[in-house]
Image 1 (cartoon, one colour):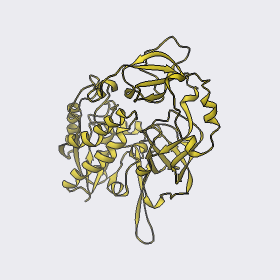
Image 2: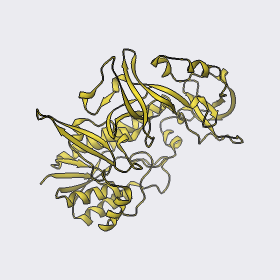
Image 3: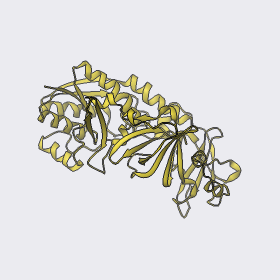
Image 4: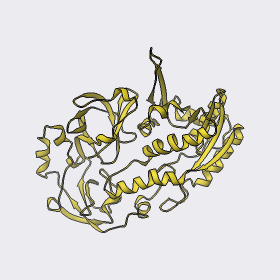
Length: 392
């Protein structure tokens, strides 16, 4: 009998994952991991970790499975939170959930599971795994989108490797969310009607500026408005090379008028609408640029402002990731993919180009709110092929 360690989070998805695996005949062990202790910036009442553990224990007891607890907070702080602070300090927008899955759930947590004798680890992610064995006996693993288009979490797992996928099980990936709730009720699980967690993985829903001020000091700076008629937009539109198309808009304080103040450019991200504190406009103001060196943020009025849109982006070549390394593109090669640059974004048509000048994604239509530090993931249909960190 294969042994599976399930990451019981105290939520309904991982609870149902454990129930389904036991029903399928696996020996199931529940393992709750605590990854964060500091509550600075956490919004009151947002799923404190001790409640999560209580619910996880109740589920394990109901299913009559072994339950273990592990504190991985030091690794989480070092691998995820410190990285997040460092990225925001540079004026970039990291995705801690992608890092958490790569570095914690399918690395540190996996190692803890192996200590318990696990053959596999399972989570409540809405995604699926497929495997193919060729005529030479080599097995490759694919990461597929979840069956529920409203809950698909394959983007968050876009950095997983063959070794990690080999050990991974995603029992709820073929289900719709309402079905998961229904199964939880059938098993009389304590989590059946519990609200889904939100916010940063294992930290919870936070007031981001307050949270970041643990390490990043607030600094008064100016907000400058850039008009849609800014002359350089026309010049950007005339660019033809990938490197030029992927270059972010570069503003200076002379390009726009000061209309307000903020508490630190590193607290804001491209495309952000809330938190500016400037009213009286016909349309909302959106952040279209940040400069942490001068501590200036640039805004534009309206969702159709040209500063929000670009047709291409550059990727960090040293951190390009291929779920199956055999599919890696070489210098001089390009391929069409379906692409997303943030969670829950509908897949966008485009192409990946590997050139001697870098790696680029070129989209069929301009993309809104491209933010440095975020992950871009490219798909072949419902299969995640690879991912990379956006430079700009």
